[in-house]
Each structure stands twice: as C-alpha cells, then as structure tokens.
Image (cartoon, rainbow, N blue to C red; front, side, top):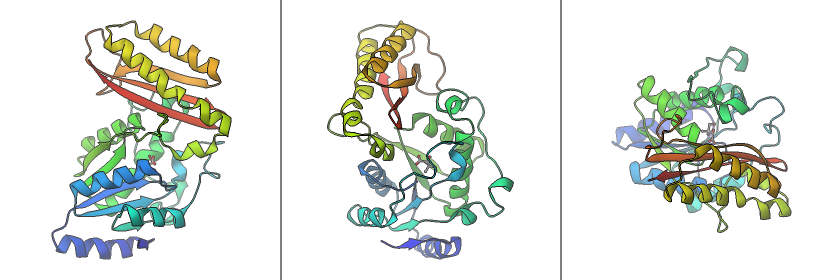
Length: 282
Ligand code: PAF
C-alpha cells in the first residue's frame, strides 16, 4: 500500500486519476484501523474508482488532558490492513502539512448549535477541531465523496452541515457502525479497556437497544427512558455522560409524533470514553 506524506505527492497522483476520468472517495481516519474502518473503505469503493484513506491524528480535536499523546499510532499495521481491503493510497501528512501556519494561527471552521450539546458540551472545541481538519482534507484531496462512520453520529451531522453550508462539492456518505459479536461498537479506544471492562462494555449497546424496543412498543416518555438507561449503566460500572433520545435529522428535541429518532450515548468505562447510538424508525 503506497503512503504519501506531502500535498505535492498526493496532487501528482490525484491529477493522474482525474486525467483518466476516475472519481475519488476519501475516508478520513486517525489510523489504528479496525474492521469499522475497512467497512468504510469498502463502502467508498462502491462510490468511486479511487479510494484515498487519510491517517492523521488531528491535535486540534483533542482537549487538554485527553488522549492525544497515547492515541494508538500504528501506521505499519494500518498499511497491512489496507492491503487486504485495498485502498489506492494512504495520505499520512504531518501537522505542518495540514496546518501550514501552525496550530495557533490556524483558520477555525466552526458549526454552531449542532455542536453545543452531547460530545460538543463535554469536549469543548472538539468539533471545531474536527470541522477544521475535515475542511482542510476536503480542500487538499478534493474528493467526490467522503465517508464517515455512524458511530460518531453527531460528527457526521456536523460535517454534513458544514459541507452544505459552505457549498463544498463533496457528497457525504455515512457508513453503518460495525460491531463485535457481542454488540460493542468497534473503536480504537476499545483497546484502553481491561478484560473486565471489555466484558461490561457491550451493555452500552444493550441499553440503547432496550430504549429502541420501548420506543417501538409505543413508549414516548423520553426522559424516563433516558434516566433509566443511565441508572442501569452506572450500576454496571459506567460513568455515563448522557443518554439522549433526539430527532435523527438534526438532534432536536422530539415531540411524541417524531418517527425518526436517534438514541445517543456517551459513557466512561475505566479509561475509555465510549460512544454509541442507534437510529429508530417508528
Ligand atoms: O472520526 C475520526 O476518526 C476523526 O474525527 C476524523 C473525521 C478523521 C477527523 O480527524
């Protein structure tokens, strides 16, 4: 799997593909690739002749005291993984390439409102970091389509908003969450879990599924369902930040008649902050 680190090398390859009339799909990642990422690469393949995977642990989306330093960096392993689920190119830039004026002088792209609650409230500045880096990657790669995972539900909504609002000519596609056999959503941060915590971790998804069933059964007491899930998770050993039932299209507060809901959760389990969600269509 070829890896390029500079914008010039990338541009050369992109120009050749464009010259041949190929479309380009982008799969932005922070590396430490797992089956969730390779599913996004496979989805990208369905939408374009060429697939670029970016691997960049973006410093601006990590807050103070978060796991930027210990975030797993596994480029050699990632390259091997992308041999079996082939991308065409890995773009693995350094910080100076992505932020040429330095992080202090970087232009910030910021989506209001959608970023105020949930992960945005808990991780101030996180989504500004995400949109700022994704806007840069879009400008550098100029893909026709870009693929993001549903596990980061709020993130993909924020990116869709930015892309539409700024008229960025990229089609944003969301790929389904990939789960371990016991239901735990795959995430690089799962590697922080001890064996005991890993046993408990699938309860996050179970709590979401429980709410999903209750909603399908006609329950509309959203607050009670959310609170019961928090109590249940915390009794199992989680420290839950939020469980929330919202409108799937924009995270607004749903009324009783809303028929497209998302149930979102973030919960700390030992050293790992786990997030997950399910969409419930009634
Ligand atoms: O979801 C991620 O891995 C990151 O937030 C992204 C989209 C690659 C931006 O750094």
